[in-house]
Length: 477
Image 1 (tube, one colour):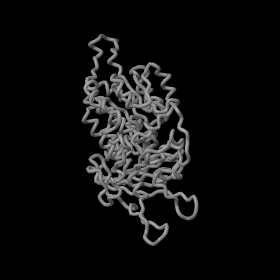
Image 2 (cartoon, rainbow, N blue to C red; image 1 turned 90 degrees about the vertical axis):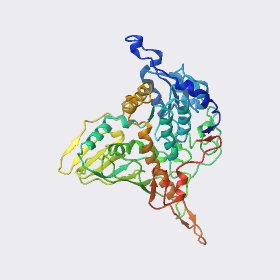
Image 3 (cartoon, rainbow, N blue to C red; image 1 turned 90 degrees about the horizontal axis):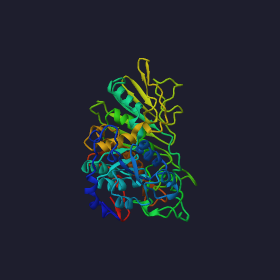
Image 4 (cartoon, helix red, strand yellow; image 1 turned 180 degrees about the vertical axis):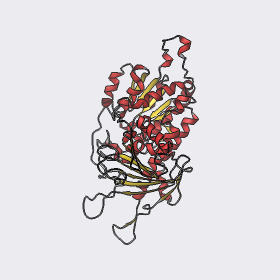
């Protein structure tokens, strides 16, 4: 790993690795030793970072020792709430200076996940990383292997993985209620930010309280533009992973987990077009499309024993109502905007985002429902709190093994999600047709064959450029 200001990595590893928990019984009943409190640092502390830090803090069960955000204005709410915590604008400085940190929550834009997580893990610090785990497949694989190598407790921030609904889905599938599943349809109303638009232009003065160089991190060097920060970065490949990256780990998690899926073997994409002038669609390879349709194919698993075809649509498009589900019953969320349908030999199972509202419709006409859940659980089903407790228990603990989204599971899930983006980007590749003005061939518009073990498309070499990104000088992973 070669990131500027990283000489501290080797120096701090021994100190970080010596983190030790004093058992309560040694100190007497009711006594909470300082070492019983995990010392947590948060990087990217507005937006999703607010709940990640607050829920890991767990009302004082743990300690927030350091906070970091490139945007000092947006960081104010947590800076003020945890006034005793060290305050930083550059996470590299934070990790170099604060040797007391035990664990780090990472809630930055997607393109920075891997750089921060790898630096923390190399120092022996446990990590909680927002979904998707990384910006690309190579990073997800690297992070998964690093968590094992450095023996740190890891968790990805797809909080629905810890919901009672997701647990119920797994139980129903394990019981064989809908038989062998052969088809999964998944959809979302994302993007809810601009996509399919021309690349932002114009010169904009950078606010004095933003460290734009650290915000860019490994991404290509471009000037500050409010079209990217905050929130709208999701629609640009330089920083984000589009609608699929935003919602894929939430929605694909249910079937991926319940069916015991692994790496897909095939992927194919189709994307929506935008016409701004004339009869030729806009060509914007830098940006994610306004809508996309992805098909992933998986071999039979030990759990499901049937090959599975997974169909993903975004941009508000969705698959049609299965015959077994009454016409007036919703599929997925109440407004049908996001959801999952698993189709098996004995019936169908449908659920909403985060595994909520799972229902089964059997071929014999029976319907099975789970009692309605609260969709906006502020503590997010204990997803962050359980990670913090597992950090205290250690890498080889039962608590870590029972986490719903440690990197051993979240890595392959993230790779599957990011495989769809590889297909989308391959779909846009084009070469000019000689002698024909404004006419192009699109060689990536076909089924792509994936060798998951070796992270390689075997039938279209140009697609492999999207397995990994080009890193800005000084930020190579």
